[in-house]
Length: 591
Image 1 (cartoon, rainbow, N blue to C red):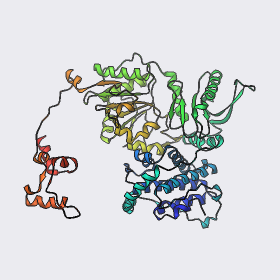
Image 2 (spheres, helix red, strand yellow; image 1 turned 120 degrees about the vertical axis):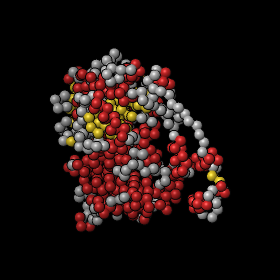
Image 3 (cartoon, helix red, strand yellow; image 1 turned 30 degrees about the vertical axis):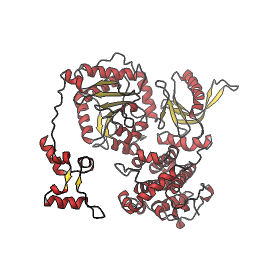
Image 4 (cartoon, rainbow, N blue to C red; image 1 turned 60 degrees about the vertical axis):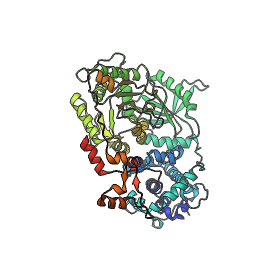
């Protein structure tokens, strides 16, 4: 008997049930193998969800991080459950790189989190559901010969094949999930502070490259506290290579608001600052919610902890940083008055206004790329940035931007992740959103994970539309960095609001330079409009007016399952859902 027997009773769950059972059976023998099978079972189950649920829109690839990052998947799975699932993903990544870093307790928590996810799946999609709870006593040792562990090749799932296999179930199971999800009661998250620290928080530290008892110490004694013993114990203290304290972590149990540790953490930071002459960064966390107080910007939520090199870079930059109130702009790169004004506006936003996001709305052709290149030069020279990430949604835009940076800032080391998979050490990284999503977990060097959440100091988002932000928003929430958006066409609709992304009021960017002003200044020329009409687009398609050949095509296309044929298709329907190649050709000919 196992905790996952309920999965094997449902034939539709066959693609992942055996892997989940194998993860449980092998845990007493090999914790790393158990974790890897937990991750595989979760990945296969998620792919199965995409194959049966029409509300889930398939992303650009089938990698786990991509599947878990779509808006539609996040709508289907609540935040607490998603955090549990990301724990399985992260521990699985650690197990894949170094199995020695996985504890039995972490493997057991992966198994319990997997059970909770599978319970949610059964509640939403199974023909019958019986409420249960995870029983750790069922996880017992069995002879290796008695275990049937599917190998990766045997259990590998292709989403295309699943989509075909489950096509008949899609409408039925989508409706069932949408109804059931409304009444699902999430499993309780309350575990002790000790377990929170040893399982969730320790895993976050290992994922960020920290090593226990080498550069991180638990229960670190700090003298001078306002109590009888004058001694306090910080939950975690993170050390740099020079032996000085880089950060303090104040931990709370999973169900407790992290804000309750704020005052205690600030006391520790105050005392450490007195002792070593430098104030450490403070992290507040309960394993699910993590905040940073970096002594410059307001307290904010972060995806995880900074790595050691992230923190050391932060302190090095702080030591070199100078104010941005009156910057010198390189006129050879961006010499127009509005480009200089845009650069100063962003500098004022980052410095004097203490904001971490800026939006430049500039007409196409007015030199957005030159403006942002000059801005990067200013931020590099004034100690505000060392590592820069430039993101665009198409390879051609990435290549074009990189070429401009190379030509105008020849001393800056650059790399295009879409073309140079092994050149990861450059200070300016160019990438599509898709490529960067895939690199976050996979990019490694001799020190471990490279693209940790504090790796970049500046993120430039080219063509910052709401649709881009929605589709790839995990990138923006993962990297804790200054953010600059570039666009010529901002949106201020309720569901597509570019300004909201950058914490700005509707219609008020950090700096704007529109087409009308550019034409008035004679930097751009205005557009010309050509008006024309085409018969189909104006009058629609009438069956009786067609040639015999076109009538045959019309019949083959529009005859319904009952053999009925519409006499005509009006222009509105034609514009909405019919793609007519001949009409497209005529429009292009006129253009």
